[in-house]
Length: 199
Image 1 (cartoon, one colour):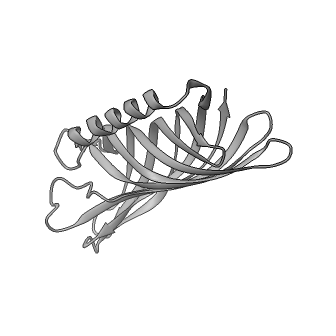
Image 2: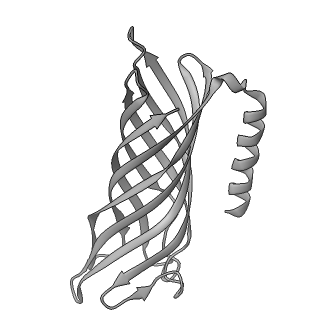
C-alpha cells in the first residue's frame, strides 16, 4: 500500500508540472456522512449506518473546459453500530485520512454556474478505530487494517460565487479485517452530502 501511495503522489506531481498554473484552482470542503460496513460470512453480525463528517481541501486541474482532474485530501470521522446476535450492540468510531483522485466531467451554464460528475479511486489510512463501552482499540489489537483502497463517485453543482453543493458515494474494495480475514470480510461504504468553496 505504501508503494501505491508513493505512485499516486508521483503521478500527481508529474501532472502538476505539465498543467498551466492558470488552469489550477484550489478549494476547501466539508461533508456530513453516513457510513457502515458491508459484512460477508458474518451471519451473526450487522453494521448499521452511523453519522460522521469529513473536512479538507482539493485542487482542480482543468484539462479542457469540460474535463478536469480533482485530487482531494480529507480528514474523516466515521461511526457505526455493530450488532452481534449473541452479545448485543457495540458503538464503533474511526478517525483517518483519505486521498481521492477524481476524473471530472463539467458543464457550464450561461450564468457561469457549473454542473459536474466525477469518478475515481481513493486511498485511505486510519489513525484510530475502536469499539466503545468497553473500549477496544482495533488497530492496537490487530483486528483491523489501517490502509484502505476503493472507488468513489461524486455529483454536484457550483454557483457563480464558487460555492458548491455535492453528494458522493465511496466503497472500499480491500477487506478491512486483519484478524479472522480468512473467514469473513468487511468492506467500508459511505454516502455524503457536502458544501465546498473554490478560490
